[in-house]
Image 1: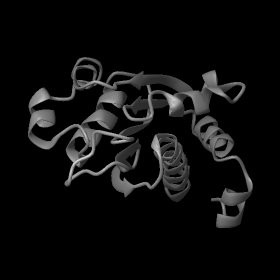
Image 2: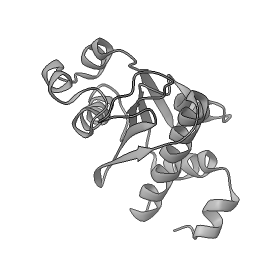
Image 3: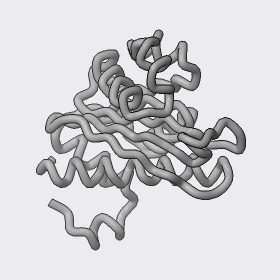
Length: 168
Protein backbone atom coordinates (compact mmCIF):
# COMPACT_ATOMS: atom_id res chain seq x y z
CA UNK A 1 0.00 0.00 0.00
CA UNK A 2 1.31 3.46 -0.93
CA UNK A 3 1.46 6.34 1.51
CA UNK A 4 -0.16 9.68 0.66
CA UNK A 5 3.32 11.16 0.24
CA UNK A 6 4.24 8.47 -2.30
CA UNK A 7 0.99 9.07 -4.17
CA UNK A 8 1.75 12.77 -4.48
CA UNK A 9 5.40 12.30 -5.43
CA UNK A 10 4.85 10.16 -8.53
CA UNK A 11 3.03 10.34 -11.83
CA UNK A 12 -0.37 8.88 -10.94
CA UNK A 13 -0.72 7.12 -14.29
CA UNK A 14 2.62 5.37 -13.78
CA UNK A 15 1.44 4.20 -10.35
CA UNK A 16 -1.84 2.96 -11.86
CA UNK A 17 0.17 1.13 -14.51
CA UNK A 18 2.32 -0.54 -11.83
CA UNK A 19 -0.74 -1.71 -9.90
CA UNK A 20 -2.51 -2.93 -13.02
CA UNK A 21 0.57 -4.91 -14.10
CA UNK A 22 1.12 -6.30 -10.60
CA UNK A 23 -2.41 -7.71 -10.59
CA UNK A 24 -2.44 -8.66 -14.27
CA UNK A 25 -5.49 -6.45 -14.79
CA UNK A 26 -6.55 -4.46 -17.82
CA UNK A 27 -8.26 -1.06 -17.84
CA UNK A 28 -11.09 0.15 -20.06
CA UNK A 29 -12.34 3.73 -20.20
CA UNK A 30 -15.71 5.17 -21.20
CA UNK A 31 -15.55 8.90 -21.82
CA UNK A 32 -18.04 11.53 -22.78
CA UNK A 33 -17.04 15.07 -21.76
CA UNK A 34 -13.30 14.31 -21.88
CA UNK A 35 -13.48 12.97 -25.44
CA UNK A 36 -10.63 10.48 -25.07
CA UNK A 37 -8.27 12.51 -22.88
CA UNK A 38 -8.16 9.74 -20.26
CA UNK A 39 -7.31 7.09 -22.85
CA UNK A 40 -4.67 9.42 -24.27
CA UNK A 41 -3.14 9.89 -20.80
CA UNK A 42 -2.96 6.11 -20.41
CA UNK A 43 -1.36 5.55 -23.79
CA UNK A 44 1.14 8.36 -23.24
CA UNK A 45 3.03 5.79 -21.14
CA UNK A 46 5.33 3.46 -23.02
CA UNK A 47 4.23 -0.13 -22.53
CA UNK A 48 0.62 0.78 -21.81
CA UNK A 49 -0.58 -1.98 -24.12
CA UNK A 50 0.25 -4.39 -21.28
CA UNK A 51 -2.48 -2.88 -19.07
CA UNK A 52 -4.69 -0.53 -21.11
CA UNK A 53 -7.30 -2.64 -22.91
CA UNK A 54 -9.49 -0.10 -24.74
CA UNK A 55 -11.22 3.23 -24.59
CA UNK A 56 -14.74 4.14 -25.61
CA UNK A 57 -15.46 7.74 -26.59
CA UNK A 58 -19.22 7.94 -26.24
CA UNK A 59 -19.92 11.61 -26.66
CA UNK A 60 -23.46 11.24 -27.95
CA UNK A 61 -26.33 9.54 -26.17
CA UNK A 62 -26.61 7.14 -29.11
CA UNK A 63 -22.96 6.14 -28.69
CA UNK A 64 -23.53 5.43 -25.01
CA UNK A 65 -26.40 3.13 -26.00
CA UNK A 66 -24.76 1.47 -29.01
CA UNK A 67 -21.22 1.02 -27.67
CA UNK A 68 -21.80 0.52 -23.94
CA UNK A 69 -25.34 -0.81 -23.79
CA UNK A 70 -26.65 2.10 -21.71
CA UNK A 71 -30.45 1.93 -21.81
CA UNK A 72 -31.82 4.87 -23.81
CA UNK A 73 -34.74 5.08 -21.36
CA UNK A 74 -32.24 5.57 -18.51
CA UNK A 75 -30.70 8.53 -20.36
CA UNK A 76 -34.15 9.94 -21.16
CA UNK A 77 -35.27 9.67 -17.54
CA UNK A 78 -32.13 10.86 -15.73
CA UNK A 79 -30.08 12.68 -18.38
CA UNK A 80 -26.67 11.71 -19.69
CA UNK A 81 -25.01 13.56 -16.82
CA UNK A 82 -26.26 11.47 -13.91
CA UNK A 83 -25.16 8.84 -11.45
CA UNK A 84 -27.31 6.15 -13.06
CA UNK A 85 -25.84 6.79 -16.50
CA UNK A 86 -22.20 6.89 -15.36
CA UNK A 87 -22.79 3.64 -13.46
CA UNK A 88 -24.23 2.07 -16.61
CA UNK A 89 -21.30 3.43 -18.63
CA UNK A 90 -18.63 1.97 -16.35
CA UNK A 91 -20.40 -1.40 -16.21
CA UNK A 92 -20.85 -1.28 -19.98
CA UNK A 93 -17.12 -0.66 -20.43
CA UNK A 94 -16.42 -3.81 -18.44
CA UNK A 95 -19.05 -5.83 -20.29
CA UNK A 96 -17.80 -4.75 -23.73
CA UNK A 97 -14.11 -5.31 -23.05
CA UNK A 98 -11.69 -7.80 -21.56
CA UNK A 99 -10.88 -5.44 -18.69
CA UNK A 100 -11.17 -6.07 -14.97
CA UNK A 101 -11.07 -2.37 -14.10
CA UNK A 102 -12.93 0.50 -15.76
CA UNK A 103 -13.59 4.17 -15.34
CA UNK A 104 -16.24 6.38 -16.91
CA UNK A 105 -16.96 10.10 -17.05
CA UNK A 106 -19.92 12.16 -18.24
CA UNK A 107 -20.40 15.85 -17.66
CA UNK A 108 -21.02 19.38 -18.83
CA UNK A 109 -17.66 20.87 -19.83
CA UNK A 110 -19.17 24.09 -21.21
CA UNK A 111 -19.19 26.82 -22.08
CA UNK A 112 -22.83 26.01 -22.93
CA UNK A 113 -25.07 23.07 -22.12
CA UNK A 114 -25.50 23.69 -18.44
CA UNK A 115 -28.81 23.98 -16.61
CA UNK A 116 -30.00 24.94 -13.13
CA UNK A 117 -29.82 21.27 -12.11
CA UNK A 118 -26.54 20.57 -13.90
CA UNK A 119 -24.50 23.74 -14.31
CA UNK A 120 -21.36 23.88 -16.41
CA UNK A 121 -18.63 22.00 -14.53
CA UNK A 122 -20.93 19.22 -13.28
CA UNK A 123 -19.27 15.86 -13.88
CA UNK A 124 -20.20 12.35 -12.79
CA UNK A 125 -17.34 9.86 -12.55
CA UNK A 126 -17.54 6.11 -12.09
CA UNK A 127 -14.95 3.45 -11.31
CA UNK A 128 -15.31 -0.31 -11.39
CA UNK A 129 -12.73 -2.51 -9.71
CA UNK A 130 -12.92 -6.14 -8.60
CA UNK A 131 -14.13 -4.72 -5.25
CA UNK A 132 -17.18 -3.02 -6.79
CA UNK A 133 -18.45 0.19 -8.37
CA UNK A 134 -17.90 3.68 -6.98
CA UNK A 135 -19.45 6.89 -8.32
CA UNK A 136 -18.85 10.53 -7.52
CA UNK A 137 -20.35 13.85 -8.54
CA UNK A 138 -17.93 16.76 -8.91
CA UNK A 139 -18.31 20.44 -9.71
CA UNK A 140 -15.23 21.82 -11.43
CA UNK A 141 -14.63 25.53 -11.93
CA UNK A 142 -13.12 27.13 -15.00
CA UNK A 143 -13.38 27.09 -18.73
CA UNK A 144 -13.95 24.01 -20.88
CA UNK A 145 -10.28 23.04 -20.88
CA UNK A 146 -10.06 23.38 -17.09
CA UNK A 147 -13.17 21.23 -16.51
CA UNK A 148 -11.83 18.51 -18.79
CA UNK A 149 -8.34 18.65 -17.26
CA UNK A 150 -9.72 18.46 -13.70
CA UNK A 151 -11.95 15.55 -14.71
CA UNK A 152 -8.95 13.56 -15.96
CA UNK A 153 -7.00 14.47 -12.83
CA UNK A 154 -9.82 13.39 -10.50
CA UNK A 155 -10.42 10.20 -12.48
CA UNK A 156 -6.84 8.98 -12.10
CA UNK A 157 -6.39 10.07 -8.49
CA UNK A 158 -9.56 8.29 -7.37
CA UNK A 159 -8.70 5.21 -9.44
CA UNK A 160 -5.29 5.09 -7.82
CA UNK A 161 -6.84 5.47 -4.39
CA UNK A 162 -9.37 2.71 -5.03
CA UNK A 163 -6.71 0.32 -6.33
CA UNK A 164 -4.44 1.15 -3.40
CA UNK A 165 -7.26 0.87 -0.86
CA UNK A 166 -8.31 -2.52 -2.22
CA UNK A 167 -4.83 -3.89 -1.72
CA UNK A 168 -3.98 -3.99 -5.40
